[in-house]
Length: 469
Ligand code: BES
Ligand code: ZN
Figure (cartoon, rainbow, N blue to C red):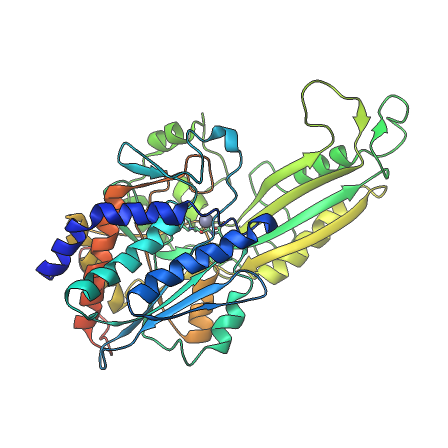
């Protein structure tokens, strides 16, 4: 890679971390209406990064949180790359489990701790700083770049599709790059070619119109907490299979070849159990842990609340019980169809004497990218150089990034999922962090990538990638 760019990255490494801290201090929790002004500030922070570099940039208002769009289109005849990321974060609760406050970024043992450190502010920032390094040294970028950085990924990207459809012409480009996934393991960087889809719902059961004395009334009216427990228990059989009728009907089964590829990755189940603090793994019978996590559909309770949850006893029949559920989906499954199937199934399991209320939040299908794409080898060589390793893993992952399928459907784009994080970075959990070594290697890989993609030219020829396994 260009020496001046490399030197710039080295000389400015500490400042990049300080700027990332400024970004992480803004509590951009998209699910929390009280954070709305902070999401605006988050968008302004991202906007200023681009404006300062001479990008044509704008903050695009939406019905929800704003999208930041920025482009640098000054190199005719070279590929145009779209970078997507999100500046919103998950809620930081439970706050008491954080060693240092979630929005006071703190460096400990080479990692930066804060909500959003890895998911996704730290990873997004790598692609901004790589552009800065080229522009501040060489004065131009090897490729043309368009950035879409949104503020609603963690709540299902609900206003992004309209933006993409409305700007279809302007967003025309050759390939998309997203860093919002993980490496396979420490020092084992990976390119992710598949993600699971998702559907997210909430169900509330209501019994009496207010909480009642459980001695005076208990036994004479249905208890919503017991009702919801029965409903939840009906979601799986004792083989770990989801009981929603039709749930597996459209699942495209894993090929024997892919199952073998997963096995060849060499998964360490003992380390996995120790890391998570579980005595045993669990899940659908007949599948390995890797298959269960990356390529089998699931139905998970995310939250469950009812009645009195404070200290000591309280003798009531609660008025309401609520459960939040998400299903992870695999190729072939339709989020709309399965949301309706889940709705009907749970309704049929609800005791007749309780009122049933169903809310659907969001959904997106699974995503699988052709692992033989010529772009993959360009990305792999950029990563190998930055990490100083001789191979890059090709993996699937279990999380969801709703926009990648829309990129394919609406813009005809393939997406390179280049994750610089680790699954152990505590994303969505207390004490989220990002290794600063991974942060700097991510910037370096991104800076390399612009050059590698430029070398490929605009009409890449398909090739089978080397050094991938
Ligand atoms: N960065 C994650 C997705 C991810 C994490 C993919 C790890 C692969 C490995 C992303 O920000 C995320 O959490 N997405 C949500 C999407 C949902 C709210 C629609 C998810 O997967 O829960
Ligand atoms: Zn996330």
